[in-house]
Every structure is written in C-alpha cells, then in structure tokens.
Length: 66
Image (cartoon, rainbow, N blue to C red; front, side, top):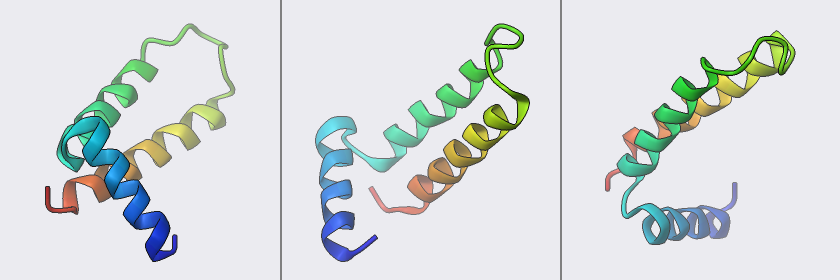
C-alpha cells in the first residue's frame, strides 16, 4: 500500500470502528464465525485462505497504536 492508501485505511478504521483494536476484535469474531459454517459450504482451502487473511489483518491491527 502507498502512503495515501494507508492514510485512507487508517481514517476508515478510525471513522468506522474508533480504533484498530476494535476492528481487530471484529475480525477475530469473523474467524470464530467461520467455524459454524455448514459442511461443504466452501472448499477447505478457501476457508483456510480466508482464515489466514483475517488473522493476518487482525495481527497487524493489534500492532498499530490506537
């Protein structure tokens, strides 16, 4: 991401969630919700990729001061 995109992302996070930590909380909940999907809703690899992406974003958000 370039600096303008980062600034826009940070502004969106602050405007929408108040802080990166709150967004991280919701991302963590999203990961938990994936465990309640019905069998065969998605391919296993698709779910694993989504979980990996969400957890990665969640870790980054926790490291950003807010």
